[in-house]
Length: 469
Image (cartoon, rainbow, N blue to C red; front, side, top):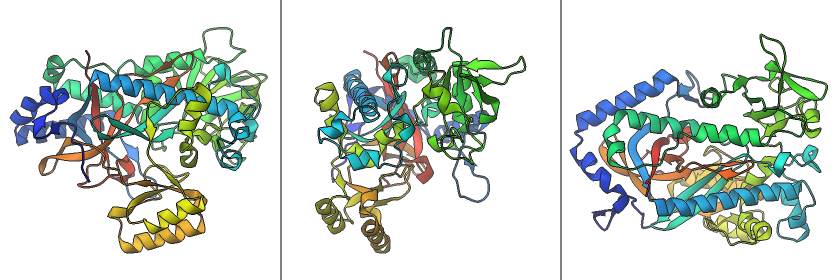
């Protein structure tokens, strides 16, 4: 399987990376080790850790930071930018239709059972239109590259995509450690993201908001794996970081407890799952949400970003139908293609997958974080046999995809510099406008030969550069 190396092609350095050739060649191993230790110390000092649930001992750890950046030309980014915006618009149109008239289902383009029987479908949203008709305000599109001009969407994240704090901090640390690189290369900035996010959230203020909207970020608390990111974004946006106990419903509005008395809240950027939002509407045992929140939301007293039920759009079985959504709602051809996908709920597809388990990547429809998946070419026979039993027991719970030759970027590893597989997660903001900063989070599979980039599975992160014209 031929693998595209983003820096080297036919033994020569590709043009986007020309500005890094001398930097890489002239950096001695001792300086590289020193800089790597410096980066880790900075991450540790500012508290950028993540938790791996279910592990013993201290669950907080650093996500490995790889100092070698990943680079896109302006032309490459323009295409990605257009494709990401197109996909975000189509996903939101699908959600609006799904909780409205359901025209795409009536037209036979998407199976009814796939969406209305989906665990992420929220009946409480049926017939309700959120401000500006936006359901998913922050859309994280995971993209892989397989060749010089081949970009494919691996999956969509429409609920609460995480990782944007790493995009911002990776850039900050690279600029601090290697200012000479930024003087020598014209690189598009990403530091405007918090302001864009705040503007997006303010633009979807509810109908009853007649003033400058008050925005808060709702977190499950400091034991959540992404708590650092919650506090980081709240601080950069200049909004309050709150937990459920800091909010209460009275009358037609949501209020925040402050030392100066209650303050009305207009927009809640929530980083807790649907099930925990409101114990009166969802899980009655939830201690994380706000009782009565859904009543205020549906009456136009507050905006929730993203909307409950938005997760239907990023289900891996629904993913198969996103290109058709682009055609159905926008009347356009998809700019970015999907990875070819077999739906194990279909008898013929299941048969093919069972016959080729040692060649395919099989994923749980509702899985995330790299869990619940089989990478056939890397799996032992016993693992494949066990996965076959799981597939036969619940075929509708899985999809399968070919094992892609993900592109590689040079990475600093223990043995020196070596190519490692990468993906990209840009963050598209949807409100009054559809916007994104030029770049995203590059995740890297630091284990030799691994295709799994998730931090929970040993992956690391890189700074992502888009070269200015």
